[in-house]
Amino acid sequence: PRPCPPTPPWFITPDEVSAIYKSRYWDAVDADNLPAGVDYATFDFAVNSGPAKAAMTLQEIVGVAPDGKIGPLTLAAVAKQRPVFLITKLCAMRLGFLGRLSTWAHFGTGWTNRVHAVEQAAMNMVPDT
Image (cartoon, rainbow, N blue to C red; front, side, top):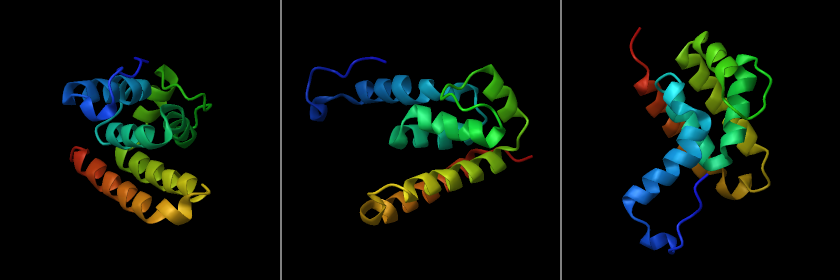
């Protein structure tokens, strides 16, 4: 991953922010190769809980050994599933993971709202079939 810029975060340009999100989160979960909607739900999970956790959760859903790296085996297994199922299951498992954290009592309402909003937005990205 690209190192953080040497300037304080409040001086980061929008282009720098985009580059960080792309390299450290989007690319880290190979989102370009995930189905529409699944890409966004996995990316947002990666931003908040780390790319490895997001990848391992997706791998668990599709029955691939969870190694935290989305590669050809994971992508092939993902392709066999309906995006709506993957989004629903990924968001449910994400909430389950967050609910087990010691900080749930303080942040749980906000996390729940965020995950539900991400789930809805991701569902809206799935093409009509």
